[in-house]
Image 1 (cartoon, helix red, strand yellow):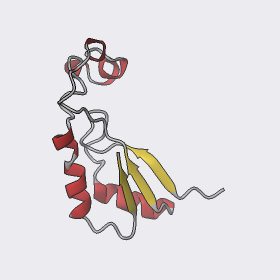
Image 2: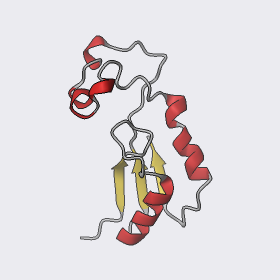
Image 3: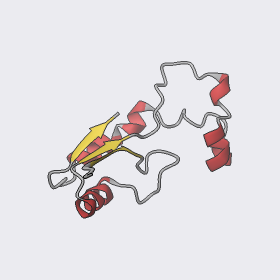
Image 4: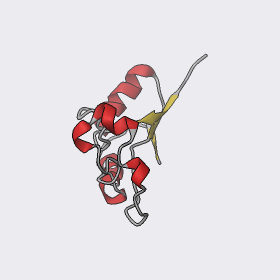
Length: 101
């Protein structure tokens, strides 16, 4: 079986992502692995929606980022995450298709 995509990748914009997880990094890795599609699945919060108390101490937050337990998703708002769209526009993707959502 030949898999040509990875549709659940986090970038440097997600608190759980690595600082090296940039669009150029994903282009290079996709080429090495013969992938033609990369899906960006960064954590994102719409700041217009009230933040539920039960998400303030999510298990992911306390496991990975104890200093960010309170409001872990909140700083990863839509304007913050839209940076990746600008990164895609500014990068030669060498034919790699990027999905964002």
